[in-house]
Image (cartoon, rainbow, N blue to C red; front, side):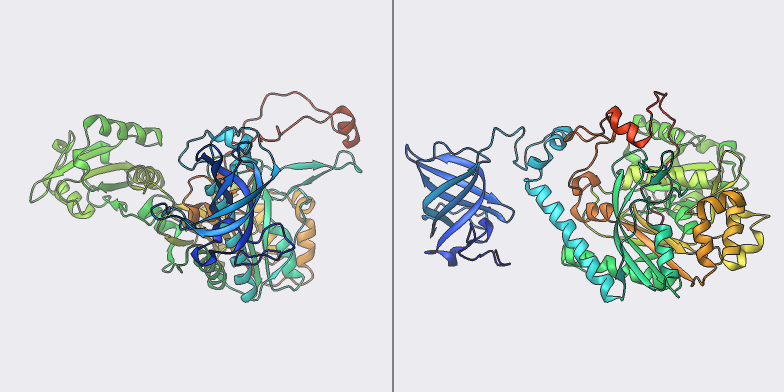
Length: 598
């Protein structure tokens, strides 16, 4: 067995990993195993083999190696020696030494690989996923997946140190409406009945609280049948947390500690300064509930400045602006493109103004419709400097904020999700957000979220003003997860179901087991779920979570490596009591707002 220092006992195939050998090992007889990264001829009978394993590369000087090809799996035994003067490779950790007097044993041959494993080579993603087992040999994938393991390990240590116990919950669960389409599994023993693969362990972990476990956690596999994109897969992994007899601040504290510990293990730096703001403040200042705090460009409110304007295009319930520093030099074609972008995002239009001079003056095709006092007020309220570009949207409050929030990201977001880690807690979300086809309110998070007690009197008369005891964690503009204090009284839970348009019979059919459980003493409790795929992607500096998942699906949901999904043969379908009916593709529902049930 190989020790942590790279050395192993004589009974193993190797004595050392490739990347751990150093000048201090000169004179030692060693055996290394790995893949041939490169083969370079040196005269008629001599070759240099760069042998690679997950720790790095070591150069081996080999005689009569004509039959050895790149990506052959080999065992090399030889003597470590210092490289001749002038031949050291400063790019390699092992660059001062080489292995000489080598005996080479070929353990497996390799056909020509379908793409270069050199990190500088660009390979189309479908080809990489078709041969994922080859792609996983690259330094990038090795680093990403090992980083993921480090994060998981650190999270487990952190949660256990905080008194949490790991409990595994079922993958075969009962269908429940949690905001996204579920994957269903037909029952072979009970034809016409189905399990659902869990969107999250939401109800199961609440039941562990009723079971008296007090503090639960799980690194849980979850599944959702929803459209895929850069930050979403059918299968995903989340840190799932639940605790009893706690309030919101304590839940936030548990999760903050786990995130800091994981980031420290991954980067060597303990991040601090978790910002905290309400959902309303985030929308007002950043135009989104996923604010990226790595850069400024906060939204400025011009509503009061332009309250009495005679320019109808800026006469609206809300007038908001962002300022792009140095943006006055943008060409007119780019400005016209921003106007079209704003319209595509739902705005009626976009007003742009270039700033120049000292004192600052504004220039735009519309400035002739505004008074000097209004123009001066815009400069002051938005803190405009010479050379800046001002972009203004006038509309209903939420639309004006969201349009400018997206333009802020388009114009100012740093090019990579890597680098600085800027965490932000968002609290006090609305309990409901939007309506369904029947006009019933929809849960902003999920139907088990506790409202603020002081808002309950408005549940029937003004439901959209009711605040939820819910919270999100955002990192660098990515929603990492969400959570809430839970409803633990069955009568209030039934009232929320009714507000959502879930009939008493339907509630009993879908959630009767949960409502029954609360009859037997459910403690006050709350929890959270963190999307670990997204967290690791940010730590790795990746823009797509597929780069930190061993075997992901493509954006179309297919697996190029296995060919899945595949049809089942008629015999298997008959066993399951399932008949395939050809239909037109269903129109997908809008994506849920939240990462996980939390």
